[in-house]
Image (cartoon, rainbow, N blue to C red; front, side, top):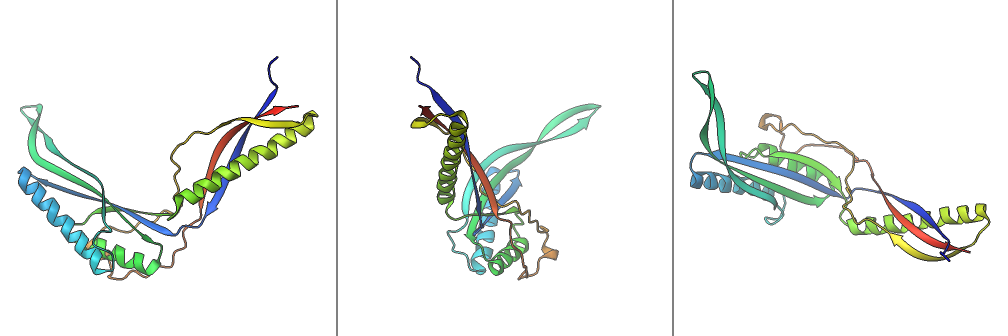
Length: 217
């Protein structure tokens, strides 16, 4: 005889206050000579790191997220025919800087980045320092939600819940970032040395699901 069961999907929700600034940056350099490309890329990285250290960041705080060098070609037209010609080597260096959420520090940091001769492209996000704690709370809330739903269903059906026989969860990456969209002009002329900002990022709203199976009596 097949065992009678009830399957319920629970949803966990958490709202967390951002306490971490994440600035993702891209440095891109192109030179016809491979060695010159590397030399320029190194110089621009040193320039950016020096600017960040000058406003209080540790010299090890700037981390490499990605690094690649590839050939670059451009299209040109000759005798009504499109052709490709070699331009040089392009080095793309993806970087990340994280620090505690503090508006004066963020202002000084953005001033340093926008005034830096390396002129990196950058993106600002707000996250949390302890993402695992948020994920754990999500799972707890999801299982609790499933149990509450199961009790309601069992009561309405006139049956009793037995033991849990199966829990299904998909371990995926959760995007724990605030929806606050902060953009700063990436031009030296618009960058005061100490940006005065009064910004309160939105809370981070996250949700996750878990499926729980009970026997019913």
